[in-house]
Image (tube, rainbow, N blue to C red; front, side, top):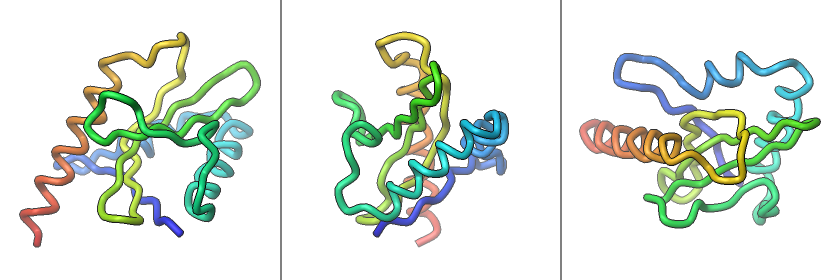
Length: 118
């Protein structure tokens, strides 16, 4: 079992919450279903969840709905906690480097602030 949590910036913004709030109803339901799989299945099919090659431990959660493809970036904090950083609608085959860099920056920020609270 995994636990999903949302990344928050130092000033309290929550990019993944903003993304999820902006989704149309049916797409949001599909995203919720995929996140439930992530929490409940030991082995999540790569169709929905996989590590991005060449990144600083960034994973992506993929959700296809209709003709749209949504990507939610995340990382592990410890063994079973998945921290969702942000999401976007993918329009091309390649994942935009700027989105990966943003996820890596969020991960570094999260880990640095977590260490300060230990």
